[in-house]
Image (cartoon, rainbow, N blue to C red):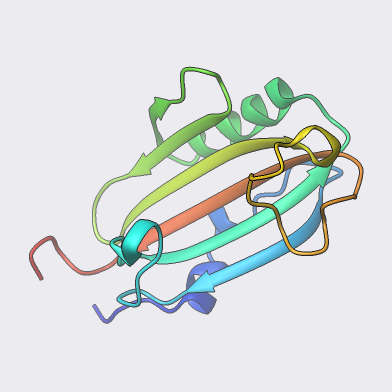
Length: 139
């Protein structure tokens, strides 16, 4: 199995699960092997999409949980403050899916990262991050 491109990862079913009423604000695709995250240590392919919607965080989390678990994803750890849920699908390729509630633009701390140009848009912002690894550990 060859490394996955960010474009190919963006075409997977999971990358296209969108909470109803959401509007795409920003997208970032990273090819497997390039690296992302702190010090670029994560070498998986990445699809990171920020959306905004008028909804409650609890409803967003519940919708993604229902969608992913019905497709065979296992529920991973969640953040203690309830802002992030993690899902895992083992095997090759191995997949991780994060749902992160980022909040509202007018309530965010000045130092918080935000999609370019979206600093003043209304709505609740959330990010989905699909990470796909096709290369076995150690390979």
